[in-house]
Length: 73
Picture (cartoon, helix red, strand yellow):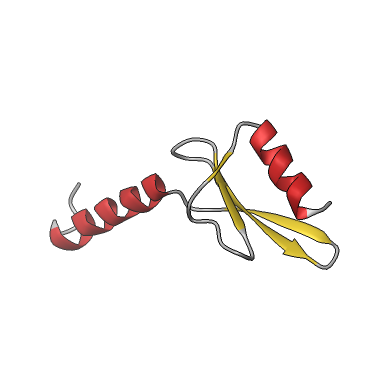
């Protein structure tokens, strides 16, 4: 499947292309918790799950609580 077709299929499924996309990859996101990265290969494309900014923020907060709060939640 060509890269353009993969991006078209992702947008048809409710995903939107984000500014995190670059020349060799397209980052798409559906909501705060669902995202993927589409990369071209010699035989087509590879679609992998990706972290969203909301997921990263949750991890940072949890780590900060664990490290600064003494591990008591």
